[in-house]
Length: 166
Image 1 (tube, helix red, strand yellow):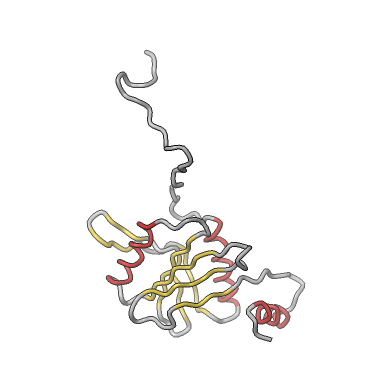
Image 2: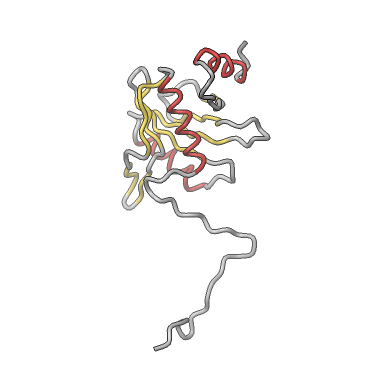
């Protein structure tokens, strides 16, 4: 028996210049999520947050429609923050709609979209906070690369300088 194309079925290919979206493998971080997790771990060590987890829950938005936030962050005031990390590439509209719908339906959480900035734009992440109960509206921060031989005070001083505080 010969395997191949089915008779009468044309092979379809994406339009020229169009790339198919890569499927996300649950429980596996992409590059932007890995960089954001490093930031969260540094914040945890510095006592700025209590804890964080990667993809710990899935929210049902409608029948057969779910939203899985990338991170759950426990803030110092014990409020729960759900973070959706976006790379620096073009934003997908369906993902944006899901975050907004989730923010409307699940008001007990604070929702944050962390969009990675390009190196040319200064790097780090720009944060957009969603939901009526959250203030301030927008903020941003930059990841500070850690040197193992640099003390904690020097790391904090470098971070302050990077963020414009002397």
